[in-house]
Image (cartoon, rainbow, N blue to C red):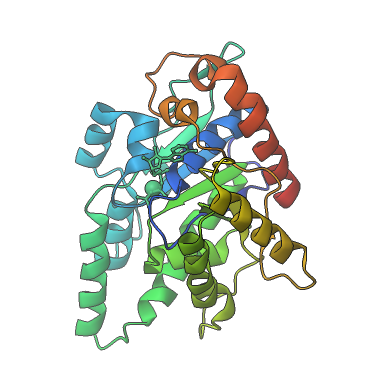
Length: 303
Ligand SMILES: Nc1ncnc2c1ncn2[C@@H]1O[C@H](COP(=O)(O)OP(=O)(O)OP(=O)(O)O)[C@@H](O)[C@H]1O
Ligand SMILES: [Mg+2]
């Protein structure tokens, strides 16, 4: 299949209002695993977090610095389109193709990256300021970002099979629209009481709240238990509660059957140097016990 010819790409947002729950670790490892799983699959990661964690894990420090310098970032795209009203800018020109330095079965993983830099926060603020100055309501920013996604980002689904958004913690306008337009929303959650308590607020803000003029999320959210420690009683109890909730009739959320354990090998893998094979990078144990089950479930959920 050639570029631009009718792929039916699926959009996956990895999001949680809560920080430090494993969103980025999930995005980076899942993106590489989806790519390794199928040599014809084209994968794109779009970093929506000004912390740029996914960008630096995928592209390495010097390459990311160069991309930010060249304005090949998500926030530069947002600024050009919505603040400078530049209609000519093409998002595909900003994507860094074949960015992964990981190899599998004699080929480089086919992964692209639209990175993010720290300036996203400023661009989002500028956008609100511009709109306020032109007598737009603050909420119209959501409408503008929705249109931008629908016009420029959703069409990337004809070129890429899987497009993953690494969302920032909190619910910025950009995060909210990415969630509302994605086919699958993965919510990584540490199985402790406070994390699960926060899930309710997140759910109510997006899935329960009927935002005027904005698309409703396509599906209920899919909770992925991360950093699970079986020897911690609270983790086991909270997991059980999540499982019972997901099994209930009309459950507002789905739950991945697989859990991501606390794993030093997984954490180390996503920051390893270029030039390794997928198996060298992730270790056989991480691949067979974490990544293969996760990929199967993700494909099952959106296929
Ligand atoms: N399965 C895991 N086992 C052990 N540590 C983990 C695991 N997943 C993530 N971590 C660690 O937890 C911290 C947060 O992970 P990560 O950056 O993926 O979370 P995040 O939700 O993207 O954070 P943020 O909200 O800041 O974007 C990191 O130090 C990471 O190495
Ligand atoms: Mg992150």
